[in-house]
Structures are given as structure tokens and as C-alpha cells.
Length: 456
Image 1: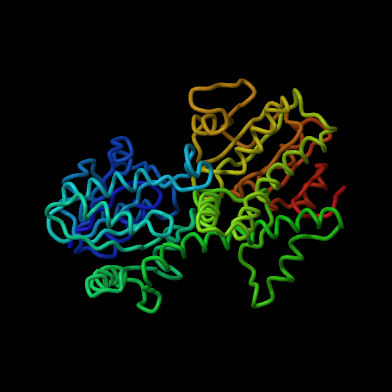
Image 2: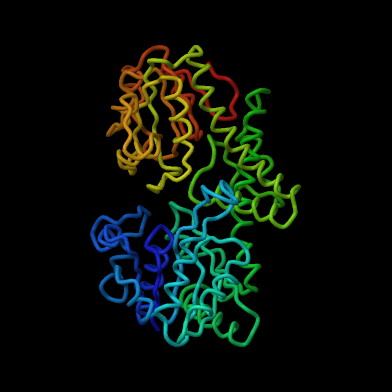
């Protein structure tokens, strides 16, 4: 068997590396027209940072795992073709700001149709709207002279930062296909790949539409929990309650559970906001405005939380940060990843720059040029945005210090030395509730933490 993956990003690279590592008899080829990205996958410095990913890639690369740019040749050779291309939110035309942009999906389908011969299984791995498989079927069958296709939906449920653990021991593998003899046979073939290391009872098969919709709904439900607890964090601050104590109390209810009840400056990443907005658009398209408004409120609450955190910094620093230095620790949307897409830090930093602050950012994994590009835009510069090489450098001479990513190293910084080098009073704004607040207050910091009673 030969597997081809179109797209060498956060999903395609790790997923194919795990399949190759667990199935040494299957040839796995990841292709992408971006030569620089492919070169990185073939180097000792992978384009994706995930704990444990280096080891998995090195265990199979050069044996049965290959990263290449010759897309058409890989399509011809593949028996199963995974489509792992981007599906960003549209920025133009009908559905702008909400609908998924499916141009890369369509381009992939047209290329597959053009070069394929014989029977192939096409696997939707990208997050796509319900009924996309129908469109792919139409494109494939209308444009192929020698190919026969079955389209399956196999959404990814990886959490960045724990992707390798998620691939090794997934909660479930979801595979959707047509309920025809040919569709069932295609699903069985893909089930057989995952069953090499995933217990069969964790592999779920459904119809195509249930599988496609499940990915959007899963992310919407997780994001909803974060927005819900973040809304309560504001009430906790107003009343003197402690959001962590509230979350612990309600999480003990087995019907609720403790996961995704951690209050913070807001969620980010490539999936949550994009998928919820896609769900909103679908609901509107199918004439369900009340359902659309319900899910849109999850995104609105998240945006409000990010803005509220920025406004708290300004109001605490005597209602002005103009000309003041603010240290921002963390720029990735979560720890153990270098992904900055929709990171809360982007919104907070932009807001502080609008208030004429000097913002000094430090992140252990995000490159300086990416930080500048995310905040300012490609090719733009601003002397007020500085990128530091350490937390200590970022905090030197700062009026306030804001933690926006929960990197473990921030928990054990030399806070006495940091305090000594900051303007007084020295303020800390803990957007992830990871710092030892009592210890910081003993040093002399004035600490604000999300959803916590006012301190000294």
C-alpha cells in the first residue's frame, strides 16, 4: 500500500509521520509545492514544533516516510490520498469572515482528477463544511478519464502541544463514508491502517455528513466551555469569588467534568474560531439564524475577554501606558507549540501599541519575524514593538509584565531580579493563572490574575 498526503503542515506532517512509524510496510509520501517547507521536514529543524515529533519523524524518514515537492508523481503512485490543505476563513465575497475558503480543496481535487489512474481512496483530513465530500465527488468524477474514486471523511482531533500523544493514543478515530458496498470497502481499508496501533473499539465509522459535521461541533463545544468559564471569570473578579475554585466545584459534577474549564485571556489557534465561524455560516445558510447567533456569541465572548485583559493593563497602570514599557511573555497561542494563529497575544499587543506603549515580547519558540508580521503585517515595522531573547531582557525597565502563554519556564523565573529591574510599583498581569501569586506579592509585585479576587 502507498499513501500520499497533500499538505505538509501541522496536520499532514505529524499524522503521516505516525502512520509511517506504526506501519513500516506502507510507503508514506508527504508532498507540498512549498520547497522551503519540504526542505525543513527533511532537515534537523522541522517546520512544526511538537514535543516528541522529532523522534517519530527520524524513526521513519528515509525508510518509508518521504517529504517531496513532486506532487503529481505522488498522486499517481498513491492508493490512499490524504488531503491536508488549508481551509482558512474567507476574507472576500459571499461568506467573508465566516465561511471556509475551499479553493485549496478544489485545486487538490482537480489535480487528483487530472493525474489519477485506477482506483483511489481520497481522504478529507482538512476541516471542511458539511457536504464538501459531495463537491469533491462531483469534481473528481467530472474531470477524470481513468480514475475511480471513493471519498472518505477522516477529521483530525489533534491538540497542538500534545499532537504526538493524541496520535499515539487517540480518544477516537472517526471515518465517514458512503453507505454503499464500495464506500464500506474504502472505510474498511482505512480502518485497517489505523487499527495497526489504535484499538478497534476506538475507531468509529459513520456516514460522510456526520463525520464532516462532528469536527466542527467538537471544536465548537470545547470553545464554548472556555468562553463560558471566561465569562464567569469577570463575575468572579467583580464579586470576590475565585474562578479556579468555582471551576473545581462544578467540574466535580460528572455531568460537567473538569476539562476546558481553565480561565484565561482567551482561546486561540487555527481551529476554534475558524470552525465556529464556519458553523455559524452553515446555520445561516440553512435558515437557522437563532442557532447561528448562539454559536457566534462564543466568539464574541472570546474577543471581549482579550479586549478586557488589555483594558485592565491600561486602567491598572493609572489609565495610561503611553510611553511605558510593557513586557509580554508568550506569543504562541498555547505552550509547547510555535503556532501563533489567532493567538490572544496578537490582540493584546496590538491594543497596547494603539495606546502608544512600547511592547517587548518574548516567546521561547516563535521567531521574531513572525511576531512582527502577526502584529504589524508583512513588511511593516514599528520601533515600539521589540522582540527580546529572554524573559529577563523583556522585563528589564518594564512598568508591567503580562503572561499570555502558559510556558512552563515562566513559572520559575528569577522574579526577585525581575522586580528589581522594573519600574515601581511593578505590576504583573497573569493571563494564564500560572504564576505563584503569593510569592510575587511578597516580593513586592502588584498582581492581577484572571478571575481572582483583588490582591494587595
